[in-house]
Image (tube, one colour):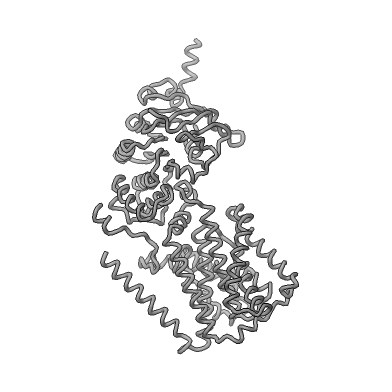
Length: 248
Length: 325
């Protein structure tokens, strides 16, 4: 699988708080990479760095064979990096259709007419066709999460960053999000998916990366990573006990 | 869809009738009604331009009086010193304000939020001090704009009408354009708009320049109506205070808001001339009351209650696409 995006030695600190020490990973074309980790591990910070909202202290990020560390947020979006936010940031006083239009017109540099045509297709894909003229601020959480994905898709991304797309949803709603992610993956778009709902990582990703202590602890097949000692240590805090047993 | 078309047709017809009635007002209205009309149209323009900044771009400027002053002084200098026509002063005012807005955008656009607000105010105060000490503009004594006495009131009225309607049309066209889509997304969430590919700096700069140039053009007609200019009044913060009042009580981020706000403001000011000592206190109390009772302004309350939107900038879905989907 050809690499679409790679991160090397990425580090960032806020004052004396070293959030990311050294993060490294690759993302292949059409691949879905899940990123898990405890609260405060720096998962959202990682996405903010990839989209250009935050500037890393050191490290490289190569997207489509070009280093994008010095590239602006807008240009990253236009080169094909789309994202959603943990707390949906759709444009509340605009309709679902207009929200999607923003993604197409500015993320994909299309005319309003062309973006409008695509917006209808996207709203159909994400299941918001019947709510296209509703204001985003009046949609339910699930619909706003869908709309977030729709806006990102309208920008014609090559890589989609999902920040807790399933967070706060019921089990049946999570299944709907999973179905949308499968459809996106089938269209060939690569995805980096941050999630707290670990079940989605098992069913919706090709590989899973564990982010903890500011670095990539382990990366591999979802089942392997979920069953790994590292995940157990990080999530259950059993590392200390095990080390004590080994010492005894 | 047919219902929407019929509704649009009715709205357009109603607007046309209002414009025709207003156009012929000098032929049947009293001098007082004409002078009130002039003020309302000019304040609509000032309100629309401030709304473009504060309501859509998130640029809360307290320095838009800079451009009222530039417009006024351009009218005075071009007609009194260089003895040129009003048309020339309009062109010069547009040119000078464009250049000035562009120059000051570099330092003030480096500031964010409240610092931007204070920055714009400081620039206007600096300009006020500069004009008070500038021999070329007659120091603090100012100018009588004598050409204003030779213009019939009906001409000033029609000039103000064109400026007022022009400001509404300009803002409507901007909001219907690609830039408008960017502005509306920025109004709702600036950070999210940037991540989706909206160029914030460029959009804000265009907005600032357009707003400043049109405010200066309005300033020309405003001072032709006042006929006397001096630095304290031309660059005084009162202009921006009234713009903010108009937009906030009318409805921030709406086209109808500044129209309603300007009508309320001008009528209220006429009434408050009877209370010279406390007029500003009453005006402030009215603003506070409206903000508390109608946080989205009068237009926001009307829209919420009746769903009325006169100048809709909503994007409609192509009928053929709807049928196909």
